[in-house]
Image (cartoon, rainbow, N blue to C red; front, side):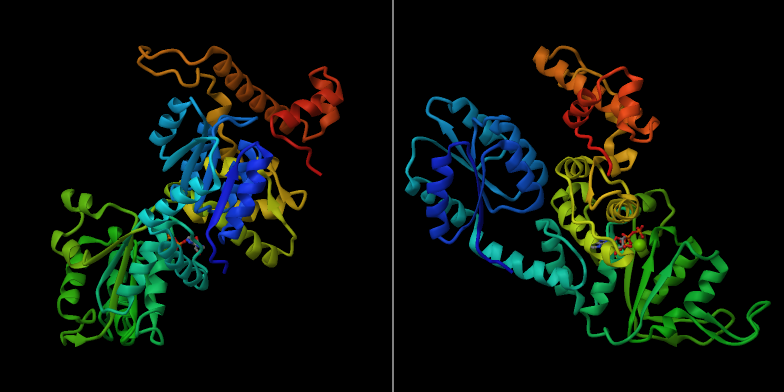
Length: 468
Ligand SMILES: Nc1ncnc2c1ncn2[C@@H]1O[C@H](COP(=O)(O)OP(=O)(O)OP(=O)(O)O)[C@@H](O)[C@H]1O
Ligand SMILES: [Mg+2]
């Protein structure tokens, strides 16, 4: 893996891109450049940059807008603002938005190097990057894709506690990778060559769950023809993963509690206490503390389980993972279904980054899978995205952008707001029209009495491209 520090220069002045770029490359930076703000955002959506040099006055969009977008997708970049002498106001705004420092034009290359060095020292950039890169390497091994700092730090911790016998509980919304983490804990533990047994607490009714966990003696109940070992016994010396722990029935909770206290249990219908050596990893998408307050979960069991709590962030709080995951799923799915999807268009990627992903990584995977099957071309475009990602909200929301609800705030700039609403309307209208006519451009143009070429121009402007 490339371990040099990456830097992106976003500036419309060719001289700055060229000479500054060359000299930073000599300093060992992996240098990228962009002339336009949107071009810079497109690079940032796909690749983490350690440092971003950002000119505030760009030909297409304002640098502050670029900064805002950047902070949405990659909070860890160090942003250094380049601004014209006399535009300190914007520089101050930029600092409020999370820029690290600013320089006024004209400046010398040494000035930039000085600021970067200062930032590096403060943020511990070099060490941190080396550390993160080691972790990324390791993360990739288990097909657990992430470049989010939060996740990488969690993984570092997971690998530390994996080798201990400690009970672990993993909290996280559905589809955030709880099971993936549980199996990683097992694989990195000394028990890795012993069984890893998963028990989904929602899969069985109460009585069957008990015998599933602890086993039963012969004749313990009707149908119990022979002795059956429970999963705790089967997993001896291994790891038991108690999935959906929040759904465990109260009666069983007390039996699990007793088991956690001394690792002894009785088979259903048995009177002998048996012993087994298992490590417990539990997971839940519920707030156990709340369940305790509602008396649906035993407090003593909560404390027994909550020894090493791990919290997996939802995907919307680590948007920098979206692109690496898309790349990964494209690779995997191409192989699985024999396609040659090469990339995702910039507009499609932007919508995917803006989307909230309530089903998290599982949802992303499913969306990628169905798009990989149905996409017409080798590039996934906005046309291939499911409706919920394109934004039903945007289709119906024609409220004035930036207008505070209380009405007391200043009105937003009229022209800008009008343009935004119109854009939203055009997008929604075109989508409906295209869908209705099965993406037949000539037919659409005819229906709204427009010239075919004008209609195509309109489509391009709204980010639609003809399916081919
Ligand atoms: N970081 C990741 N990299 C690659 N794949 C991932 C990652 N996180 C999750 N996945 C994949 O997403 C899917 C859902 O993950 P997993 O089953 O571990 O989630 P979960 O938190 O247990 O969900 P649930 O609460 O719904 O059971 C799986 O296919 C898993 O392989
Ligand atoms: Mg799960």
